Length: 178
Image 1 (cartoon, rainbow, N blue to C red):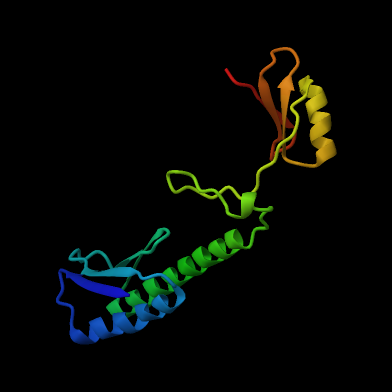
Image 2 (cartoon, rainbow, N blue to C red):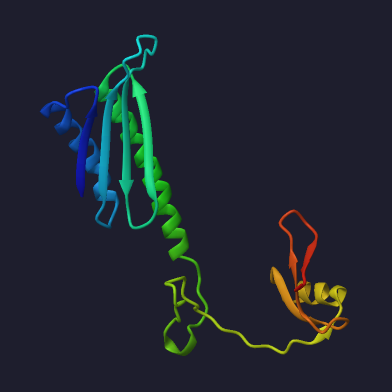
């Protein structure tokens, strides 16, 4: 992990830099990939602002860029608060990745998943089935029988391939090509 500490309207002391490295160093243990963290410490010059010591951090990961900003009356407290906020974000990010990785996948096509040419997600399952001509109402009945969220069919009236799907808020939707 590379940590860069900058100061805006203040000189970053060695003790402040050490405190920031100690606190933000905990995050590097939670993030597996090499990351870069930038911490900007600032003091607001406006006397009407009570919480004038601001800590703003940005973490660059292979996935999302995480950002947090906290302000208080003491710079060390601001650093602690911004670290806590980033820890929550990292935890949420790791749980999301874990849920995504734990999804059950179907059988792989010919032993290895195909990846999209642009580096997109791999196709892990391929299915072939006959597309029978029917109307939308019959397709909804078939959708209920198979228990999926969508059903592909050939529209008997237009001979186009259509999709019926179950809507999150109830009811069904129909996708027709134009």
